[in-house]
Image (cartoon, rainbow, N blue to C red; front, side, top):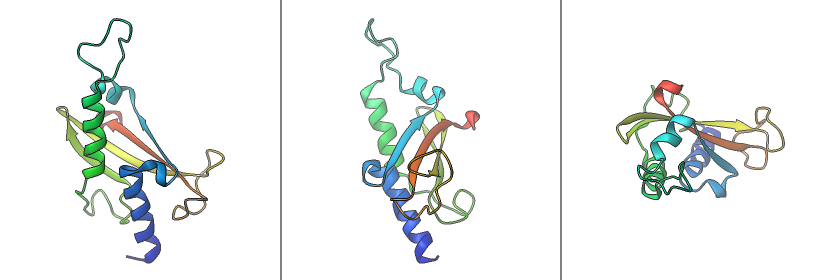
Length: 125
């Protein structure tokens, strides 16, 4: 593995564990949002997330360590699959230019790359 790939891998690991440190944002799909919804939400917040479910998702992403050639062929730790809440979830990290929605010119440079981690149901992929 090259030093550049290893550095990108480290930044992606930080995007899963401490996104604020590497200019990363997290997004979830509608299906994942439904999984996080409180089963007994307050009447004034029918779409409220259950804090323990949101915490479980954060923990599952941070602790994910099942890398192999099938989900990590380039060694960048930018894709994974896991089971949570009885559902199969995928996460994907994409690299964008910090000022617009074009691809990042240098994914290993946090000044030239904004990481976007998307979590989705496997059937939403």
